[in-house]
Length: 472
Image (tube, rainbow, N blue to C red; front, side):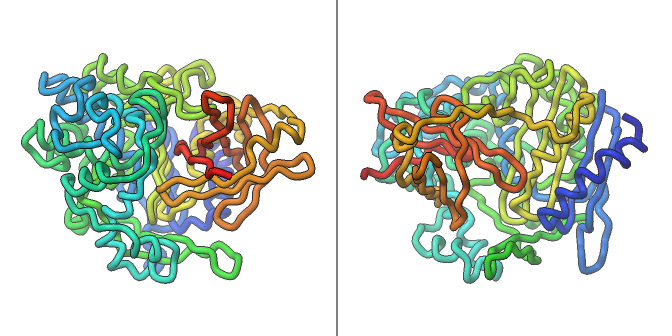
């Protein structure tokens, strides 16, 4: 694809999705074999002053940070300072699983793959609580009421104390159950600190950001303040039944959870970073990681749900268009981010916006489709209809919840299964063995139901978290 074709074909596709999501400012960068083939900016980094977005404009990247954390762990392994198969308690002796179940069986690998068996926990909000209390955008919202009911977590030690005293049972033995978990990624930062003798942020900066030439990537609000080319933050709330986007400049921070999602970066820096996965370990002419470590990070270690696999801080689709698709997204207040790489085809890409709630992965998939010569609208996953009897649909009806502020209600009536979440009801379409999909913002989203040993539906997997079904 030449520049004119990107402008005429892809840009209207991306622009329509940015406008639909009311994005104040966004940026997209695509490389082929390390060369920039497209950069597009949408809106402004500062809407009021109409400052343009550049490849160096700094955005929050949220959970895209997780791959940096895993890369730090892999570098420490290469240095002989740890093994990913070491027990977590070898480095964090005060760590306890909820109810101290299987504590000594949990390894660093289990943390990196979200498989310690830990249920979803509420402590990301605890770690952000101090900054949330200073944020007018939180007032009169659900996070404000949530904020009042949880403790403050400022340190790794406080995070471990809260996890260990959490009253809920685990989901299973380590390695048995995938459930996305920010808390254990926070603790990976603690392992980096204790093993390296440096702060997590300093270690990542010195061993990854600097050698990869990432000069517009920082962790802390203080570091961010030293840069001028920074995207202003926006967030959204529902008011009178309508989705409203508004300026919300206060940055949320979480010192005990920075390893889970608090790096800020730019399109240019992230494209350079993705070369590590495209080349087998190199960026900006420097060897950042060994080919063996890259292979470990990008291996499909576990199945997340009906569609995705997980590596180390990266999501994996093993067989996308004849190659392995590597990606990860991120979402926090003021952040919707997506990175992706198709190493066999030499493709890398980044999508960043300055507001939460944007389906940025679909924009990324559109870019991949264009590069692969497929229609822009080709979905990442195809779901075939598999109609079920009403008797079978009743299996899924009930209330599902987890401690990460997620609740969903499933109803089976007149041969139709529906799901209600956050006040909105969606039709669930049967698409496989205990698999359903629903349509939201133009995207098909999977919900996978899980059965216990007796064959009874007892959990649901949504947004890669396991929600427990309440007893009837």
